[in-house]
Image (cartoon, rainbow, N blue to C red; front, side, top):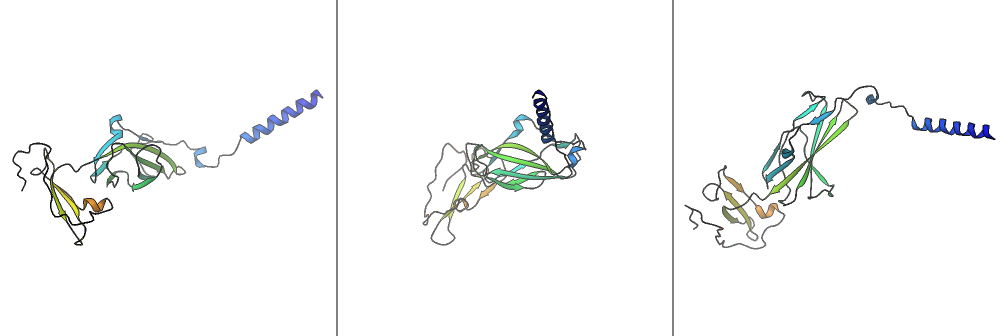
Length: 207
């Protein structure tokens, strides 16, 4: 009886060892991997961009400590709604550097911008990096112009420059079709606009 128990235990142990072992037939089993790393300062992980303004991200990537990034593919995507729980992403770029205009609405919460790097030379091994992006309202004050394209509804346009916008020192910006870009126009003709000011604007006369 004791001999049978010992034989049974040895047989079970051998079976468990066989189950726990498998043959790795991928190329990763024999070749050392040059990992992809992103070198970034902590403050650079948070990006602030104005609504409808271009976002520019140039990641400092290395592969095995080298700047030779042969075989890497890139996918930039941003989630459609703020918050960690939102898993719905929109692809916004497929190059190493990201230079694009985001369509996300302005929000006090951050969006996640995700960079997925795929190493096609190592069985499509993937690396994921995250940035926090705050989309801020870039339309502050300026010259507001109303127009209509169908004689029935109205849209708004905003001109921002150093003559119309307080403390503005950038190139002139014109935001066209503000309402229709958000999915709807004003359902009537706007026949007048009332000027408003949050402070004193030296040298600016509203007519």
